[in-house]
Amino acid sequence: MRVLVLAVMAIVLSGTAARAADPRYPDWPCTQAKVPEISLAAVWAGPPLDEVQSKWKDDAKISALVAKLSARKTPLDEAEKLVKEFLAASASDKTANAKLLFAGLFDTLNAQRSQVINGLERVSRKQREAADKIREETLALQALQGVTPRDDAKIEALSNELIWKTRIFEDRHKVVRFVCEVPTTIDQRLFALGRVIQQEME
Amino acid sequence: MSSSRHRDDAAPPPPLAGEGWEEGVSVRKTPQEERALSRIASVDAIRPPPQAGEVKAARAQPQRIEVQRPLHTLMLPLSLFAGLALANAPAHAFIAYVSNEKSNTVSVIDTDSWTVTKTIKVGQRPRGIDFTRDGKFVMVAVGDDDTIQVIDAKTQSVVDSLPSGPDPELFAQDAAGKILYVANENDNTVTVIDLEKRARLGDIQVGVEPEGMTISPDGKTLINTSETTNMAHFIDTSSRQIVANVLVDARPRFAEFKHDSSEVWVSSEIGGTVSIIDPNKHEVIGKVTFEIPGLRKEAIQPVGIGMTKDDKTAFIALGPANRIAVVDVATRKVLKYLLVGQRVWHMAFTPDEKYLLTTNGVSNDVSVIDVAAQKVIKTIQVGELPWGITIAP
Image (cartoon, rainbow over all chains, first blue to last red; front, side, top):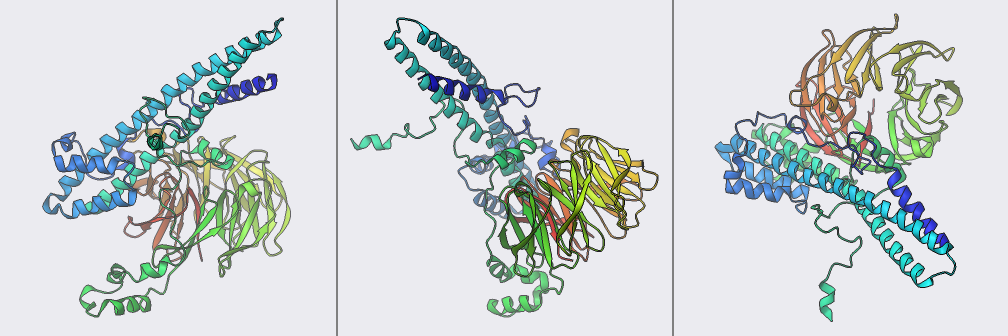
């Protein structure tokens, strides 16, 4: 049991030590650099979208298409095809529709991305609290084990509790690593769709 | 009860209630990736690279023919069109090799059909890539395997390896193609290799982590940039000694000589500039700066540089700005910015200089620029995290 407890501590400590590579974002848990927002210019070299603003929301057809294209369950190949079909069918409204569609995608995917980033930071804070708690309880357990007479029932209960908490901590830690890739996946989608829209406008 | 089969709460890892993110993320991680990720954000490819054999199908597509022949001549049945397209294919089809840092492969691109015709499995973490001067072999630095692999251009398979130091990132060869200089990221040395004998001649202690590397057209000077010193170090290739150090802006990544040897251009990834150095006086004589409306300064990270043979136009890859800057060499001013792909780093011209191909690491693709028109004409999906590119001479 003692070996296990030490192992648990080692895991928990290692899990938190490698945090916060960027001092500006102490809660950012990812190795990928945190880029809070995608700037329009990084993904769009087409005509200005100033006058478009949030008008895309007023167009039911475009709103529905934006929702479909933004969903990660829509494969990117298919999304690109949908963009081409939509713009091909737009005829004289092509440029206006292209601008509206991209404005919608930009707003929606940026918002989706912010949500994921906020979620990551929230979990990161929770994980730090959980790590503190596990450390505390590990020390408490060690203290209990040193006491005579030994209260085996209590040691058993605390050990189980600790194993459980550590498992949750570790599982979350793994999930965080996978979710860390989501903001980039969203960047890729926005860029790829933006590129198709710009090509279709030419 | 069978109803329990519909519960999904037993699926690992446990869901995080109310955290507002979604599942469906790709799941792969190696120590090698971790290193790559610490530098640039990246994810697994969304689409796999096309497999060998696809080129034939692509060539048979009707839209290829429209490029070759005017529309009004296309009055024969489709099956015949495909044959005509092959027969009328331009005489100058080139072959480009792209190193994919994350998928440990090299993609082979046919510049006639603009498709990936083969994907070659190579060692771990391929980055620097270059043809031998005779066009017979492609060398690729596979950093995590501590070697440079040699690909036979005929069979398109790995046939040999060269003795580099630990973690080779990139290399430069002299004009004759006899001597290869390899920047080893891990031990602060440049390994000198005799390409004919494929044997190690010795090491140059550069004392700092070598980053970018280039050799003067006369082969006498090797320039090595270092991100620890923020300097371009000029090394005499005969004495193998550093003869001058020139301070540039933060994290110099790449150096390129003008073909007439009068200037060396050095890109600074963090500084966001390209310093122009007089290689005789060893001093900075000018700088190229970049400004893209709506883009934060720190998103403009110059890396790769390509210069036309007439030394009139330079193309500079701007990393996460997702653009190539087209620069007038004489005035050192940006003429225009071309949106290519995400995190563009390196590039190569076709030998006829009609096209420039760029590697876009995050969008996992290669952009094709029409050099005369200064326009992006094509995007080709390759492997994950494309890094370097070389085109058969």
